[in-house]
Amino acid sequence: MQKTILVVEDDSNLRDFLKKVLSANNFKVAEAADGAEALEAVEKYFPDMVLLDFGLPKVSGETVCVRIKKDHPEIIVIALTEKIRSSDVVHGLQIGADDYISKPFIAEELIARIDTRFKTAANEPGEPKEKEEQGTEKIVLRESIVLIIIRIIFTQAIFVLFFSLFSILISYLSSYVNTASYSSFYFTVLIAGFFTNIGMVILITVKWNSEYTEVSKEGVIKHSGILHREEQKYACNFVEGVKLKQSFLGLLFNYGTIELYDPALKEQVYLLNIANPKKYSKTIQDIVSKEQNKPMPFVAMENKQES
Image 1 (cartoon, rainbow, N blue to C red):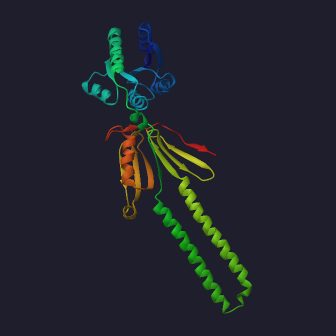
Image 2 (image 1 turned 180 degrees about the vertical axis):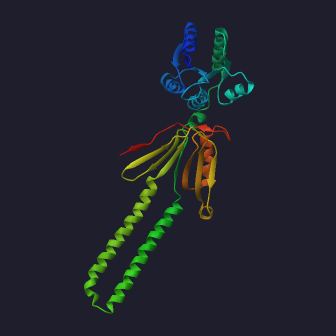
């Protein structure tokens, strides 16, 4: 079956040359002139291989390489670059490139590398199904139920305090005036307060259920709102480090805040007051990192509201 190769190169002359050479060797060719176009072309054409210039405008070739290997690990990536230092070669291979060709190169060398990579890929066993499922791993985090219970107890305490003071006031007035006429008013206030109290408890519970955060390899999404739903999607390119913060009460009742740090955007994403933070900090680390202590790319996303 004819293979598709995506050529990502900002030099139009070199891009045309590569297209001509690849077409002459019976490959389908797709093109992209910058990193942003490359990411779109990968999703549009699903190429078997990408010839990737690392010195790209808009989105760097390194970022494109990492994103391709994250979303489509089966795609072969051959890096094209003018850098020839061994440290640069190692870096390119570490972030996911399958091979590395320094410019300038001859067409015969490129075709030989391409053929070798396709033959190697054909002989490699397929990825286990479990690994494919790990790519869609997602957890849902809510505020600790302990804090919700504390809020409900606080609401009940206010309710009891209010009616205790109200009853004391009525008792005090009864010694000076005839309070019989106030009986209906008293019970009206009591019933109104009771249903208000029930409504506050229901509101606290519904709010807790509707406000949560999803963490997956696709990003961090915070959901909020009851009648009018809103999503806050964080534009993290890389998450480097998962930091756990717990107060004394947090340690006592097993809740805390997890902080994700994006060094590229210099942005912190806080997952506030969640239950079992130690357990989830390890789970989140496993989700956002392919390997321990290595950053994992997040998809850049924007805010979205839904009615």
